[in-house]
Amino acid sequence: MVMLAPEQQLEKLVYERPSSLEMCHTHYCPGCTHGVAHRLIAEVIDELGIQERTILVAPVGCAVFAYNYFNVDAAEAAHGRAPAMATGIKRVNPNSIVFTYQGDGDLASIGLAEAVHAASRGEQLTVIFINNAIYGMTGGQMAPTSLSGQITTSSPNGREVLSTGQPMHVAEMMAGLPGVVYSVRRSLHDARHVIQAKQAIKTAFEAQMQGLGFSIVELLSSCPTNWGLNPLDAVHWVRDQMIPVFPLGDYKVADALQSKRARS
Amino acid sequence: MAKELLKGNVAIAEAAVRAGCEAYFGYPITPQTELLEHMSKRMPELGRVFLQAESEVAAVNMVYGAASAGVRVMTSSSSPGISLMQEGFSYIAGSEVPAVVVDVMRGGPGLGNIQPSQSDYNQVVKQAGHGDFHPIVLAPATVQEAIDLMTLSFDLAEKYRTLVFLVLDGAIGQLMEPAELPPMREMTGLRPSWALTGQDKRRQNGRLPDKNIITSIHMSAEELHIFNVHLQNKLAAIEASEVRYEENFIEDAEIIVVAFGTAGRVASTAVKNLRKANVPVGFFRPITLWPFPEQRLAQLADRAKAFLVVEMNAGQMFHDVREAVGRSVPVEFLGRMGGLMPFTDEIEQEIRTVWRRSEVLALHRQQ
Ligand SMILES: Cc1ncc(C[n+]2csc(CCOP(=O)(O)OP(=O)(O)O)c2C)c(N)n1
Ligand code: SF4
Image 1 (cartoon, each protein chain N blue to C red):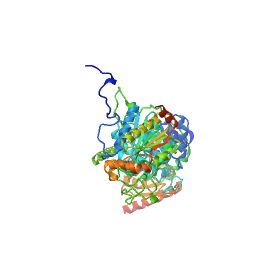
Image 2: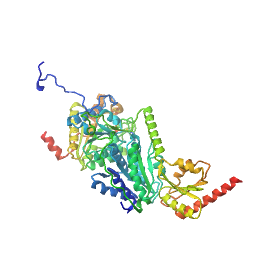
Image 3: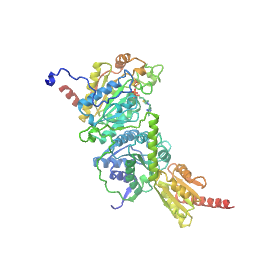
Image 4: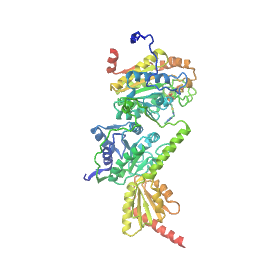
């Protein structure tokens, strides 16, 4: 048999299950982009070679079982408290890489104080923030990120901003805190944006690996089930309805990360 | 080591440090703030973790995180803060991680005041959060005992993978007494096999170990039932071996005074005084509020004519004494609220009243 040098090999493996992602079915609904976000995170963990020192803090919300899907040490926090629990874990395991994975109800509503203060302290954590503008798990109630006029089970006539406030802009808000070194918003609605989202997730983990401070990636995500849309219409809704309200972009990128990005 | 004059809160903090506490998370509240302040100095000095959290909710969840990582961790607070921490207590119980909480109780409800009180008895002993669980609850009456029980708290927390409370009223927290601190405990730095450390820390012979998960979720009813049965069995084991109490002049006592913490101190003096006056009164002080020394009280009920429970609340432990003693023996109550303490002479007077009443009752029974 003739052995081919790697560059001569005819077949090249381009798709493989990341080792940090468990071989199991998830409980996410068809067309939900929670699964996409999981895969991106797992790929990044593999690529950075940090699987064995990563610890996940899972939220309350649809990602409540995230600890079943990643092959890393993991904790299940109380609703909204993931950044506090992660703080406890990281402070006593300073060499580990700790990340929370939180929905908008979890982070922007009940756990806003924990998120803001962990960020403000510049806690060496990475937060993956899934903004689907609704409470998925409890069956589609209004979230702080719900759009003006959005119909949910607890805003049946559409969200009224006069009484319930404007959609909350987490990436922008976090960017205002000195402890935050990386705060960006990306979207998971199509392939191009998914690739951009992965890059951002990678940068967020790198920020922690370099000990620079708190990093957060807000990901616009779909909830076909509670929006009452089919999967394709749901990603279109992200594109057409959510992005105009939640502009994608880099709200804060610390100099140390910027120069690294310029080099690469 | 020689005795030194120590303030309760500071002594407890230093005892925790010497017991090998590796991380402290807390939020200031009177009358326990000196504990937090002492930790803020000592922990970083020793390269350990101190963090002033943004709230009690955050503090207890930080404790939950560090406990999940398998280190000796504690927090401290006072009544309104303990109310806020209940969420975390329940999760800690549900995931069976060890943690220690010091509650220096003040008057309530609401903001109440900052005077010494025992008003958290029910909250801590009966229902420290949602679900079926009990923390171990230790109640010292002196600064020395607080120091000794602090060390025990960490040991029990680890032994049973449970939450342990050290509860005292503001008086013991603020009191200065001569006491002796234990020597600094050597720390191994080892983490238990279930702890969240990152898989690399548990790697052996080059094999990637299974991931560790700390969670309180059991989605199926059967599974959660089985977990709860396991938890109840563990609690039963604690009840069988961890009951602690102090008793005095019990042998020939006709009236038995039951009190804990500062109320116990005052009541103990009253009992001593009355013994000198030949009143047949005995003293019983639960040191573990949970597990409650109910078997011992039931034994004593066979001999005593009456019990008097003295508390700095409206009669919360009273019900536990009542249940232990049964209906055949009268159980009476003397309580003060709002930060008031019953004075020695008030307790003496009450003991005499209860004694007289029981004599009259006995006479009636004979006729
Ligand atoms: C203390 C507490 N309050 C409320 C709930 C109920 N609850 C579970 S998930 C959830 C909303 C989650 O929404 P989000 O964080 O946006 O995540 P999603 O499900 O949309 O992914 C709520 C309110 C809870 N589990 N605990
Ligand atoms: S309810 Fe919505 S967010 Fe939750 S899994 Fe289903 S689609 Fe995804």
